[in-house]
Amino acid sequence: MRRVAVAGVGMTRFGRSDLTLVELFAEAAMEAVNASNIKARDVQALFLGNVLGDFEEGQLNLAPLCANELGMANEVPATRVEGACASGGVAIREALAWVAAGFYDIVLAGGVERATAMDTPLATRTFAMNSDARYEANTGVTFPAVFAMLARLYAQTHGLSLQTLKEQMALVAVKNHRHGARNPLAQFQKEITVEMVLQSAMVADPLQLFDCCPFTDGAAALVLASEDVITRLTDKPVYILGVGQGSNGALIRQKNPARIRAREAAAGQAFRMAGLKPSDVDVVELHDCFTIAEILASEAMGFFPYGEGGRAVEKGETTLGGRLPVNPSGGLKAKGHPIGATGVAQACEIVRQLRGECGERQVEGARIGMSDTLGGDLATVVDIIYGV
Image 1 (cartoon, rainbow, N blue to C red):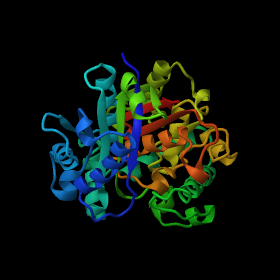
Image 2 (cartoon, rainbow, N blue to C red; image 1 turned 135 degrees about the horizontal axis):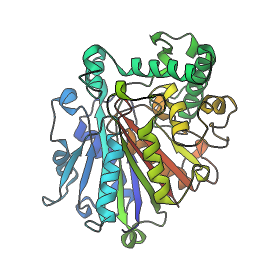
Image 3 (cartoon, rainbow, N blue to C red; image 1 turned 90 degrees about the vertical axis):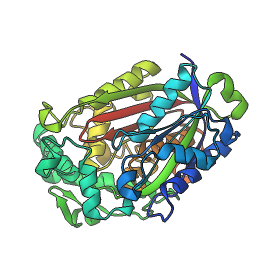
Image 4 (tube, one colour; image 1 turned 60 degrees about the horizontal axis):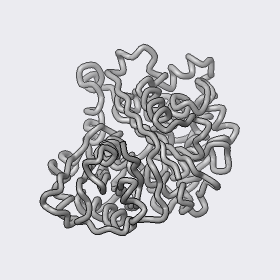
């Protein structure tokens, strides 16, 4: 298996956009292509993460339209990839496999979504389609409800009062908005306070409005190249050292949903492939669709013992300047969550961090970074480790 590196990345500003899906992706993809010192016609395959293009624009079969917009050759296969909110991570993993296997030398992976094209009732309904229709969506279970239940289960399991957990979750929101305020591409670029979080509207008890990430439009892309090609494209290659993907079934069938087995599997695969352990990671972008989700992810990935993720936030370990900065981009919570693009946006942040290109949110000395993307009700998880 060949080593694979990232040559260039690109990302749009996240937030409401009037551009079409094809136009949004073209903006991010051409930035990645130009940063890689190639032409679009040099790309040999495209893997595009998108979840809800049919509801957003009435547009399916999106990938070949994007390839054509970029000027790719007719013989280039363009494939839409869907893995719920983990679609971008799945697209990167698919692209990696083709390059590592020697089938292609240069592949474009990306994602795009226009979630704000839907009103809240439609968006809520379509998001719920990414859970199990038999046991969850058809009984009225939504993602806020799922993570509200997980928060209560987590507090009970680890002997925390719900108020203590709510304060820890509020600190997650405050931290990520503080990071997002330093990211010019983030949807929200204003800091908030714990009081603002705890006084915001209730969404699904105990989750309040500022515990939840926003609907978002946006696109992100990266160019992957084989080791023998990468040195001709950039003097700042960032190698993919390990990758893992885990799967799970309906939430109701999981023995202890607050312990996310699919994430444990994905992270474990990635660490074994890279020959690394959690303590080797300098910076991580993980899936904080809700504040409790960041705490759960940080534990399942092995960064903190179970029951200690919230305390790590209290102690400042996960903020910029802390032991392990988590979501320096602002995360889904502040940067935004265009579901098909989220995993690729995480990769863009990690690559830029390892190249020292993040300005005032730069993690000093970062050499190993990791991304984590969750899809559905804990059903699909993709974890990727990068290094220089």
